[in-house]
Image (cartoon, rainbow, N blue to C red; front, side, top):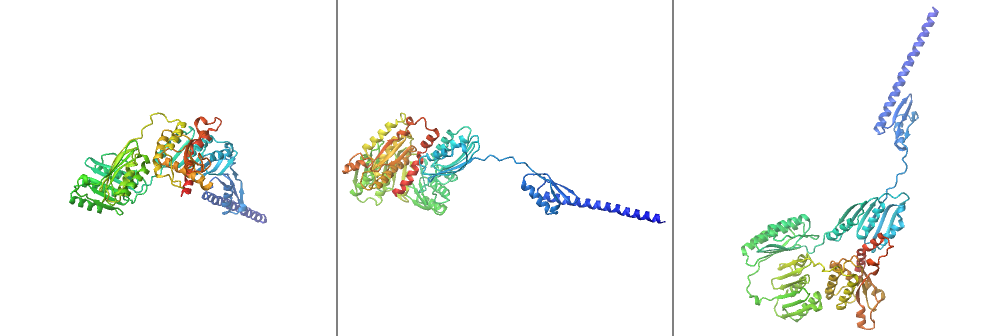
Length: 640
């Protein structure tokens, strides 16, 4: 009996122990599974899917390959937030480093009137000192600001060619930003005109190396048109533009379409520019041309916000009143209409006062007709000599009293118009200024129209019949540089360039001399030329030096205004240092006050040394225009 009780007790204890072990096993497994699920969810939510989780009792083992040390630390931190940190066993590894990546070599070069600045990272092998020296060699560069760092790493393929091309381009572009990378160059620049933009793009593409990719972004600012002028004349044979201005491509398209509807007979291109008086410019022109077409004949002129509509003589008064009334209501705000219906002629042609001037192809001018008195006669004679030259004027006018009050203004405006022609004639009557002739300037008609509108005033009529002829091609090859220098000296001996007393302003009667010099330089090509300014010894030496520099620059600016390529020209003042006569007499001082044109012998093609580096020579020779621009800015401040 006692043995049975002992066995039962032992069996009971054994069963209880087994049951406890089973329960403990299930509890441990549940804890492990729960920990593993929570940790996995946390890692997935943090985007750490590369980490592996294994729960072993209370231990949480993390394994896997972390991209870097920061990701490994992030995984431990995230898991430590949901389980006790002492339970975490870190078995993770880190992706081996690939080593130091090569540097990205690149530079940006900025050039403007203040100088050149360069920033970036370049290979040590490209020679930092040589680069800065070549930048400093660009003429017209007052200073170079250097922010370049170097790295001792192999030069990438295409870097040397890209940098060499960038330096050549920099010499051509006075206002630019150039970005350089291995085998690639990006150029952002501003050109002075659409023609200059096209020329620059051609030159930059011509010297492009085959293994360099270049992106060009050259902008040409629109010209400022003042006053903003448009003039359209409608006659029996159809219509024509004497001047046409628009503020955009869309505006030009609308204006030309309206002109075709108003019987335009000659294809015309409107000049796109700045200065439009109203955003409704094209709308104002459209309604004006439509009104002119309804009248049948006449002219309409826009000068900023002033609109002048002149009907043909004999237009019915009722039709004129109707068209004018409609146009006044249709014109946008800002525009003011002046309408003119000419009165029928009552005087004979012999009784109508008239003044005329003719310009021959040789430059001779004959002035005939009527002026008010001797004072007006002297004024017209002096004005004509200033515009055409002292020896070119033949005056054959007579004095007649009781001419219109605005007669002198009309006569002088007509002479200004004639001065813009190669040959032609102008006629002035009380009601009309007529300009006829030929010019070598494509936009001369628009410029003359703009000038007459400004000087004659509103409601005044004028008529233009101007033809354009391209300048004749030189019969022979370009002159030799030495011959050009001699011819320039011969022109100066015949009629020297004069200036206003104590000033750098070219005297008005020297305009024809500069015109002759400009025509000669067109036959010389781009020769290296120094425009020298000289003075007498009167006054302080420093003042004379500054005055001579300013005068030389004024001549350079005058040639540039006549569309002479001055990229190879340099303006330099010598003050009183090189007299050619005594300064003790007035005649000697007059001889010493002079402008001379001298070849820069060291820059002639045959004078170039064979040992010079090609890139440096190109850089220096290509950049004369910038020297001109910089000098001009300095001297304009002095002149003022």
